[in-house]
Length: 249
Image (spheres, rainbow, N blue to C red):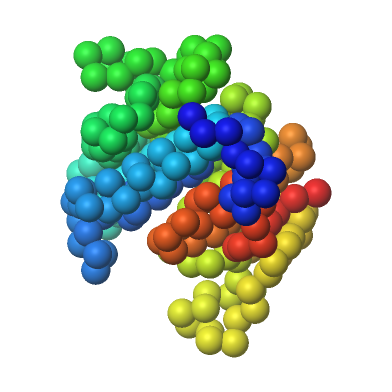
């Protein structure tokens, strides 16, 4: 690993980071379903650069590029909502396996941990084991949500960030922060540079679900919402550059 120079503009501000990646980040352009090898490799390269700067990185994986539980449980579907949630959690493991191989193809040692036991493809999530992997400079990929239905991936990310004693929770999105309204609907929507957890809850801003925000609030854990599609933004976020929206106390 490199020892970042004090004059390095991307010198990490945070030592241990949980990065929440939505499934759309792995999907092909145009909103199509599936796993794009090019997009997955791009994520892997950014993660490797972060790891090489001495950051302990854990990545919580979504699966919106493959399926969403709601699509199976709505409209009188024969698939029950709980079953649909389990299907979504299993889909995150597919993304996790793809990212694991992409990272290892460029020389990153990784561990894929899942909340749903399947020892033939991944380790079970055990907090102390996950921390030990981070201390050994392995990138830890966390899949399977919390292992429980009716819990969002955002809440899973907040929970893991607290369990792993992360310095910050990064929420990587396709937009450049948190807005007062949906900027695609209202072009005059205001982007916030900084917010408190309480403001997010009070104004019902679309950062993460309320359970995830409350978990972070009680631990005074900052959240940074930013656009990871812009090249180098993950490194900038970890370096503490003023990008996206910072939610903190």
